[in-house]
Image 1 (cartoon, rainbow, N blue to C red):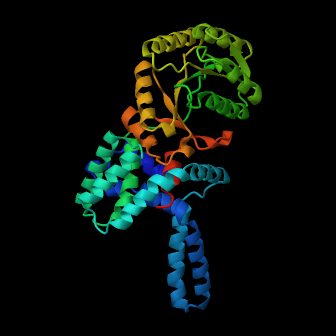
Image 2 (cartoon, rainbow, N blue to C red; image 1 turned 30 degrees about the horizontal axis):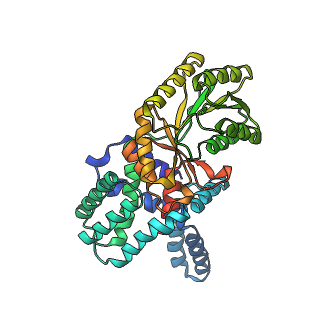
Image 3 (cartoon, rainbow, N blue to C red; image 1 turned 60 degrees about the vertical axis):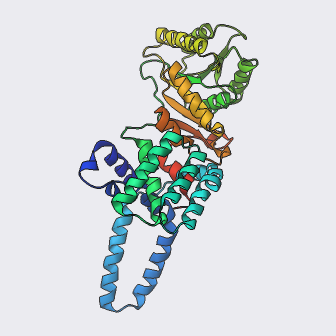
Length: 394
């Protein structure tokens, strides 16, 4: 994992485009293959080498020992996966299986059908990427990058280009930025996090899952029902707070959300809570009213909390595809979105929405939902995501 982190930081902080070729600085595909794909093969090779060493002549043994030493040195550079990391990889592996069966299987079929790269190949690749919810603008950018690599590096084999594709997707997501999937907490005062998103995306259950995770980190949490517009929303969040075991504050239906939030933060401070998670209304069809409502809620937070709101997380249903991208763009116009929570990723066969959101909206994914259980909502990790998506190619 340290080798991948080194590559990542190298790309972020040093402008190597003018010094060495892109092929030298990329290689996330091969690095993931080394980390995840070749472990069993390496074990088998070492066993064979040990058996062969017993029967070789002295001079040959010396040569092989030197080779083994070099391999051992290489192995030491790669940090072995801990049990915790292995469990996270398994979650991505399982949660993205449907996407692998759809999006990635089409890429593999394309590679098998073409012996050489040509315009027809790129036309089909473009269609596959668009159908995978990568987004038209992002696809155009990606195809142009691939064509340039093909021309510059004299690539003719589609098998080789699929590795370049993975690398370029990684580069597009990173986009010369310092990315973080960490939630910003207030170190001076109580931490308040707003959750926004249209109805039906899994916003309430996401709040409950994150609350449960925070409780396990020994944080005292309060849920505030700021969605007073949708019928049953207050009681739904109250039920989740009882299940998870957190504090709760909610007014009545049709109450002013900002007033509810004000009273909720006051109560949370009285109870010495660490984090307040706030549900909000999802009336995107009325942008002006929603914008004013969120603005008022942010003003309330700023008055009561030193440092104001820590995060505003937009919850998007991955199965909605390009509609989800449209939602992200619309909410970005309304308020300051600091991160995306992408739910129901296990339910889509497309898989490209992560790249489209980051590329077209410029907002990082902070959590990704890869199943129904609490542990299936995980902090987003671009390397685990790429591995889970392209595992069958690696």
